[in-house]
Image (cartoon, rainbow, N blue to C red; front, side, top):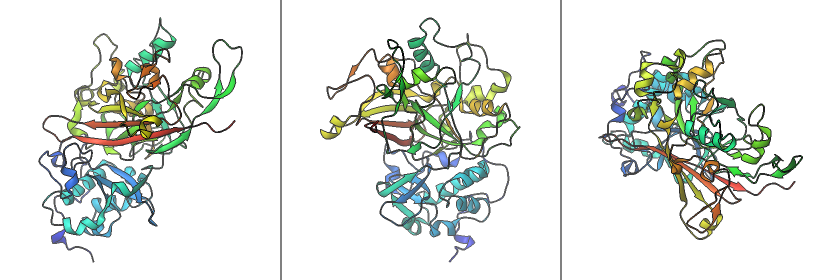
Length: 461
């Protein structure tokens, strides 16, 4: 039976008026908000009521299709639940909720910011402490520990960028000591088109890639499993509403086309890459696996963690299509990022994973909005569910390196783990874990969950 108008939440607009801007702090960010889902109120949780990230899940061992869900504490709110649909106000919220019942969230992302914001406000209202709907909605919750996850969207296209000047300089120094940073870097958001078919969700495992390698001392290449397998700590950027072919997305409106962010591991075979990348860039060195965290943290949820975007005064200013006052004031996002490594020995001995590095997304040389504006300046059309990778997120300090290539100085400097093992690059059985979170005085900490992947032995040649 449909709930009466008197029992429906009333604080969410149901008309098609102006959307809530993704940069605006609103009532959903109120640090005083608590949820009737008790685990969402625990200190340190990634998923308090101020977050409400979206994903696709089903319960293990059940005859269920994948469906949209929202993380709240250690639970998932099933967006297909009849109890939730009956509470949804007609119009924008009901349409948005209906789009989340599909096996991917593409239709929902295509609706745009007005729908995203309205649904998020509705969910915040029904999940907050004191909601009269708490008892009714408890049956719509599922424990995260029992869930299986799928990619939240069908990814049609994947573009990987190169936005950390610290990473670009460190890697360039290994190969071009006299000229580490190429002259176009400070003018152009560098990117390449990656492979969407091998993108997987956290928990992904894959065999060590095989390809051609050519050490400098040998006269010709040979086929071999990669011996220099690496991770790359990145932020994933999901496109919402796209644009038509031949049109451009202006910087001023670029973030209205971005639904949210996740964590991304751009696994890389450095020895294969070194031989193949000239003249057209990465190919087999990167197309074998990419791992994403299951939850998309909406750009709106990140509003309290916006910070000014800055460049060194001596650097050239961006061209006008990549420049703006709002960009300078709030273009960067303060996201803490960390890499942890769990070896096979650590698992067998019950040891915790070891942190290898800690960096921050706000150190990026290029911003999310600039990536969207640049990607479309030539008339390229984006579609809902397209994915951008930020490129490896490294800071200036040695402990802020987002790859083993940097941490081991190109494999020349092995480092020792607490377990007594040494590493320059990844070995079979290594599990790499990415974590991310935002925290700021006066607001509630929110997190991204984990992006974890396991390296298996290479398939026989």
